[in-house]
Length: 244
Ligand SMILES: Cc1cc2nc3c(=O)[nH]c(=O)nc-3n(C[C@H](O)[C@H](O)[C@H](O)COP(=O)(O)OP(=O)(O)OC[C@H]3O[C@@H](n4cnc5c(N)ncnc54)[C@H](O)[C@@H]3O)c2cc1C
Ligand code: FES
Image (cartoon, rainbow, N blue to C red; front, side, top):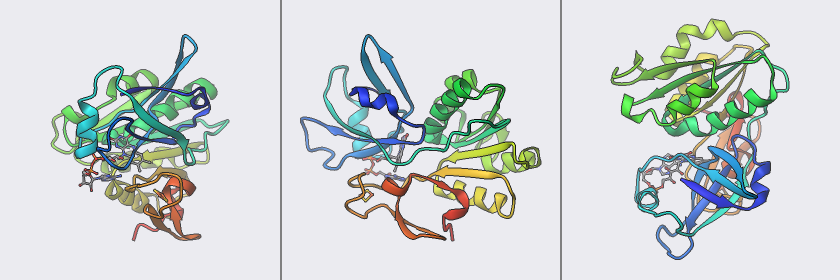
């Protein structure tokens, strides 16, 4: 979905998100959070793109909108990924529509870090669920696909697939970024435990306000106790999150 937004969105960072709801309707009552997939300027206007999967009432309503329908867009919100100024290997691990913020990050890294290799491990339930594949293939040096049902690429979980290659990214020149279901991030955390490589993850908790007021999105961290994903996140160092 492409949303015409205010010029302030041009400053958006990969990993930041928007809260969206219909302007003329109370359904869904609460705004829904979505990662920023891209920000483009055209003819003096700014457009924010989101990549979403229909999972319930809100996304079902959004999927039936027509061009020109009005939505309230709040953002850019939260803390984005730290984009390194120098780095040799940038490794992205995406689960399903978790590819959205990583694609935005890849675009940014491609523009800003000369000579960096960007490698993406992209996993989904089946080949049909590999949303955003064409774009990420156009940006990354290598895209390694896995599907749970084996309909495309490596059969099995994306974290298993990444696990086979992990030794390639064990040095200080590599950075890992991931977004996807909590179970996937938990498995990644186990794989990377006790390894020196830096890894940031974007968490997708349910949110009501998106601005730090309702405490509906808190998660447990190792160093700072309970924190709000919408305000202190959604991006965290993987080792700071308590996945137990
Ligand atoms: C920071 C952030 C970024 C996100 N980015 C994206 C994105 O780029 N693309 C995308 O498709 N989705 C994204 N999500 C998830 C998205 O917000 C939910 O899928 C959406 O709010 C569901 O709304 P709904 O009304 O359709 O579903 P509901 O009717 O509210 O719920 C339907 C089902 O989805 C589950 N669900 C709802 N919200 C979440 C959630 N946050 N995490 C896991 N399960 C959930 C519910 O438990 C329920 O089973 C993001 C969430 C966060 C917090
Ligand atoms: S969603 Fe309200 S505090 Fe995070």
